[in-house]
Image 1 (cartoon, rainbow, N blue to C red):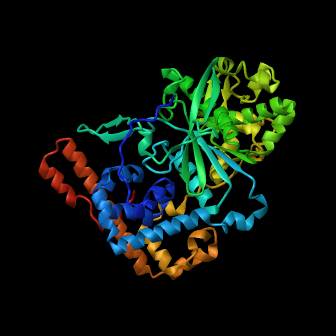
Image 2: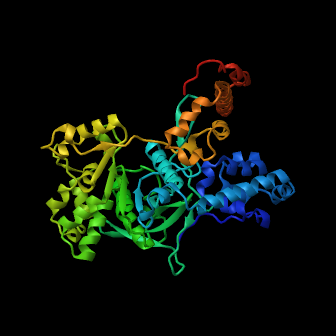
Image 3: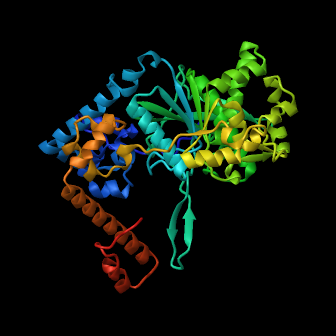
Amino acid sequence: MYKYGKIKVTTTLPERLTGLRDISKNLWWSWNNEATDLFREIDLSLWEKLHRNPVRFLQEVSLRKLEEKLSDIEFMNHYDKVLKDFQNYLNQEDTWFNNNYPDYKNEQIIYFSAEYGLHEVLPVYSGGLGVLSGDHCKTASDLGLPFTAIGLFYKQGYFDQHINAEGWQETHFTTLNYSQLPVWPVYNSSGHPLTIYVELSGRIVYARIWCINIGRIKLYLIDTDVLENNQYDRSLKERHYGGDRETRIQQEILLGIGGIRTLDALGINGTVYHMNEGHSSFMALELARKLVMEKNMPFSEAKEIVYSSSVFTTHTPVPAGNDIFPLDMIDRYFSNYWGQLGLQRNEFISLGLKPDDPNVFNMAALALNMSGRKNGVSKLHGAVSRNIFNPVWPDIPEDEVPISHVTNGIHTMTWLAPGYKYIFDKHLPSDWQSKLFDSAVWEQISNIPDEEIWKTHNALKTKMIRFITDRLKKQYMQNGVPLHEVNELDSKIDNQALTIG
């Protein structure tokens, strides 16, 4: 028995517009302005009211508005173009990966992260780590990488906030209704919900799996809110980074060990495993356990195989940013586990120790010990990381610590304003979006007239100031600010002033 959330009767789409539902089920729309424009054109006020959520929009939009669009030639031409672009994108064979690495098309990159910032309708993220993970997924899709992502499904996600009349931040959590989100339950070959389990301090905790389509790739999320679990275990992934250290270790066992078991249940075998920060480090232990148990392999050999196929990216610039757990807590959660690796307690504990702090199990140290490739997220951060983690390699000079760097990037089409996209479409080669890494393409930006860039910049600045003003007005009115003070906001921000933010 599984809990799905409330059942909602949805609008039946006209046959000619059923492609809207296909588009809504894939987060490709989140970085395609022409796709989101379709929903805006049908009912702008409803689109904004529902926070630009196409799944919920199609559930609530009136049939009358949909039928009106059937006779709108301009809209229907736009719809046909977007649907064709979407289908061509999914079916494209000449992707960057296929063109450059055709011999590796049957390999698989597995990506683990505790959070994914994909779109505001899916609040399973809290900050930069999640936004980077989301952009990694979108870029992997654009490049055509053989890529599968693993994460946790947080029932309440991250909090919403507003400023009260006294100027203090107030937070509240909203329980997600899965039926209103672009997420889909995964079923096994028998038609039953796909489930996995992990052991948490002597008890079995079950989880079911949800899927998010992100262009050409898939993100699978682990969800313990099933009736087989007690109420405590059902709420384990209720909030992102919520609860105490006990909750954190349970979430990280679910992510790491449960993530590998999810891949097994899906029949997906990875070639390379990427840990985005240390939250998922237990995944390396589960990979090793499988080799020890299934191949009758000694741990030393299993570790070398895992080491050669694992990548770890560290993000935090301070030691306190790394998750650590008391050794007695590790005993409670892994006393039945290290024997399956063929290890004694001290051997297991040593995998997660930093010599300068031997009384705790350090998740980053575990990832460093189990990963052949390690990197920070900028040149400076790479140097900082070599300093922080030098104690893991006490006999190596700091500048020789094996942590390199890969500078963070972004998914361009997610963050590029439509106004600039219009300019680039006009002045750059028609295939510029597939050549973002080609410096010869970007050199042509210097040929764009300064007037066009400045005009677009000012238009976007005006839009930003209008958004800020409208948001402040709403906040003031909710907090009972006198109307004359609300109206004064229209002249508070000078459109011609240098504005940073």
